[in-house]
Image 1 (tube, rainbow, N blue to C red):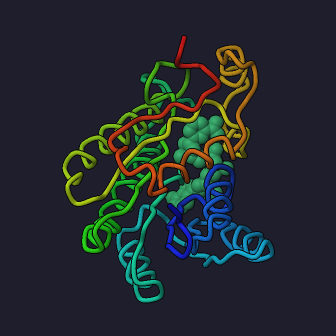
Image 2: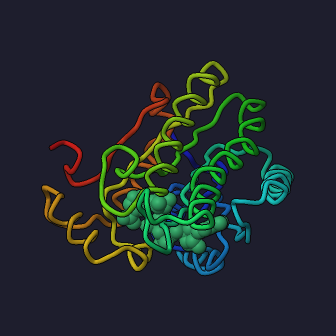
Image 3: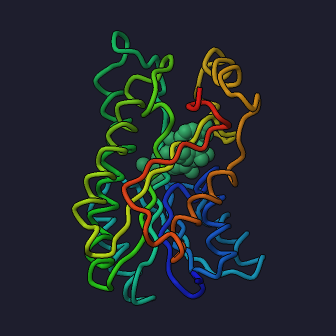
Length: 247
Ligand SMILES: NC(=O)c1ccc[n+]([C@@H]2O[C@H](COP(=O)([O-])OP(=O)(O)OC[C@H]3O[C@@H](n4cnc5c(N)ncnc54)[C@H](O)[C@@H]3O)[C@@H](O)[C@H]2O)c1
């Protein structure tokens, strides 16, 4: 029951939850393809210093041709892809309500969070199907499950990631490709720099554990879902949120 020697593609690997997931996957002995628009090299250096194997790739998840090349090169180098973690994501740069969100702001959040996840799945799934299976973990958010302030476009994108994942999980279950979703609560990463103080306070107060999560709280579950022992888990949504959505 090991991930040793298998290949993982992890987006958003330059920071936060994606970096944590890349480090964890590498510790399991996976070869990690660390994808981000920035700082993927730093993550790879950290993995290599710790004795792991990784390759940095500069890719904007909004670019389908970049995804195609990434998969082609990964298959050339490693033969198969066992694990895809779609972690890259953004929050809105401005006010994010149904009244204030702009066309551009909406398009950016949907393109990265929702369409980027679609492009990743579309690029990687044929190789997984051909090799008899694989695990995909898409990172959504509790904002895709419950209402909260100032995350209108973000909630829309994360709700779509949940729906897309369930659909693909059922469509491709017999091919051995498992698709699951993690919905983090509020996690201490650089993304919080973009959210309002009001929202941070709301999230802390709303968390029964009374604290923010750490990137590794999410990474641990992501890698667990990739393990062979998770073979009967697909189409599921896992809030990891200090009890927030249990209330
Ligand atoms: N931190 C939280 O509280 C929290 C809560 C719920 C969900 N999430 C989700 O977790 C995921 C990771 O977030 P994080 O907290 O680690 O944030 P982060 O900002 O630390 O990391 C996000 C990474 O995604 C990368 N990225 C952004 N746009 C990209 C693009 N177009 N192409 C490739 N890479 C891109 C960034 O460069 C960054 O390295 C996101 O999808 C986020 O929505 C985070």
